[in-house]
Length: 197
Image (cartoon, rainbow, N blue to C red; front, side, top):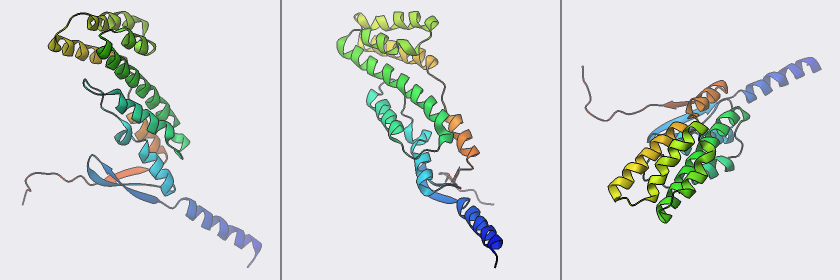
């Protein structure tokens, strides 16, 4: 056996080890799935930890800022996330920052019956053309409102601010993992009647 054949054998062995697929079991939408790809299990776990299913808080009236803050904290604490997900993480971080600013500002406005905190915290996330109409709408929280009227104003504020949010990066997540040759494999069970032939 020559040194050349030993070197070739080592290269073939290293290539087979480095491209070996790993997989982990995960849950998506309440269904058992696997996440698999040519990366170590720790990397797959890191990818799943920042997935939309794991991080996206709901953003609707009644939601508390703690959910957005928790998602932000998880995003910033994630380790071993491949650099291929950097654009997604950056976009998601901006979106979560905006959601947190809105929700925490709204909570403060509801406590104090003053809209200043909401306007101040959200200003950097609104385009100049939207700032005036949002501020006018938010100032309605300063006046006497019954619970129905307050609920309507809050709903309008959510709608207005949602239109200003940075775009949803979920598609970027899926494109990035596809480029890494990582994929979710799920077999969703349908509930209901079984059809027979």
